[in-house]
Length: 299
Image: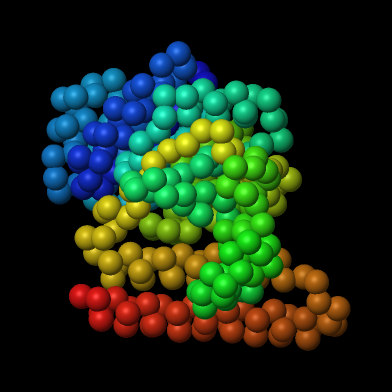
């Protein structure tokens, strides 16, 4: 089998139906399968899938296990050469899957692939292409400095500002809304880290692909529409907290292991590493505090 598609759903029945209709069209001519993993939706999602899309392999969880864990449920059952993790609030073009399959077939060094994404109003989404959120990159993003230098690779590395949205290129981080992955590489590096409940798993898996020596690519020759944050808008405080918790997990997992360019002696180097991580984590906590205050003002 060529392609296995995994869609994790939580109470966005209407968006899921539109997504599956587009997926059904894009799967034409492709030997593939589609999973919907429902995280205990409170709406009519499961009944809708069973009634209107009986060819979909539905996994109905009794509780919300999170995005990473739910995707892993589908990946463990998947038999495709490629795995697509797709958000339910997206719609794909008829050629999207075939274009991505062809690209992956022609680029054996490609571990993960992302495509051009637009919002519901037709605006390009900059998260279609991203860089690793090192502390400096994250600072430029959270401080808004990247907006002053939108085309800068230095100050807008988070969105790879120096890379045109129409240019095919290697990138560092894939967007969680559409991650086209090579199954054999997941067998090497492991599945999604289930400590990430809602956010961050895309950064983590993309980074682990790079650490294994493979490449991630941005492909602008096909596109999807992503209506961002439909389910998370229902509980913004929880989603904000989940985002910053995910950033802390990433720091604990990767910065501790990859802080290695210092010429300090071993003991002092260990001290520097701990202080560095402590500072980054405190910065994350401070940003979480500000975000929750801003959200409270908006309520």
